[in-house]
Structures are given as C-alpha cells and as structure tokens.
Image (cartoon, rainbow, N blue to C red; front, side, top):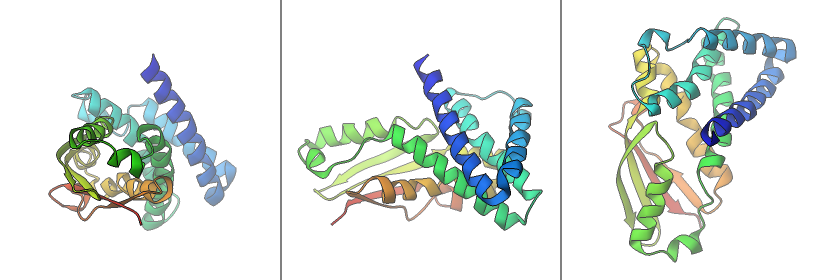
Length: 211
C-alpha cells in the first residue's frame, strides 16, 4: 500500500510539473493534447508492449518511469524537429528526476558523515544506492575524508532503450543526477566522467565535498 501510494503521488507531482513545462512551449491546449496521446499509449502498454512482461520488480518500476518519457519524445517529434523534441523531453525528464531524487536521497551533510566510522559511511552509501532498483552498483569506496564513489555497472533504463531500438534516448535518464546535486545538495559535488548511456563501461559517480 505504501509503495503504491508513493508511486501514485510521484506520478501526480511529476505529471503536473511536465504539463506546466509543456504548456510553456505548446500552450495549454497543445500540452493537454500531448498528455492525452501519452495516456492512450500507456493504456495500450506502449512503448514496451512488444518486450513481453517485465522480468523483475526493478524492470517493472523502470518501465513505469521510462514509458512517459519515451512516449513524450515520440509525440513531440510529430510536432517539431527531432533535436527540439529531445531537448524539451529532457527538460521534462529532468524536472521529474528532481522530484524523484528529492524523495529518495537524504540531505548529505558533511559533519554528520565525517562523524561516522568507515563502516557506517559505507552502510549509508549502500542504503542510498539500494533505493534505485534500476541500477546495479559496485565499487563503493571512500577515499579519506573528502571523497567517495561508486560505479553503476548495469542500468535498466539503458537496456530498455536498447531493446526498443532507441538507444539515443538513454541519456535522457542521466541528466537529472547532475542537476539534482547542483541544486539540492549544497555540500556535495558530483562528477561523472563516464556513463553507460554514452558507451562507457560504467556510470562512474564521484563525490567530493564542496568548499
């Protein structure tokens, strides 16, 4: 019950945020038309219907998050140039990512983390990474007092985009991470020199204290 309620609230908040962004570009009538097209597509099981049922709970949740973005880009590509459709979809996905990440990641505060033992810090990082069923995380590491990192070696967003022959859309689901740490985590800086969506061997998340 709790998970279903959380998902419903996330859908409501992210849907309203998406509608406002689309209305700023397309007008309310255009935004509602795009929203209706997406809703119809989701009711038909698109864009993942041909893949058959999800193979895990993680894939089920990832499909739920990704479906709207894929269908949005498809709907926008009917109305504008492909690069414009991608960029507008990215704005929508970024806003949805901010809403999602705010709910999943606690404020990371330097004094609190530095007061932890090494094992406690690793447990803290593992607890955060466990909230993302779309990712397989390895290499959790803490370097001294100022650095910590991990590597995402499997991402279901990337895999789903490849399976529907739209690997070009996979980077849409990466952009929100950097934006979230820039805006919402004033004490932590995120660097990510490689990502799976851009052909890297992993998504390498490197965290440093600001200042």
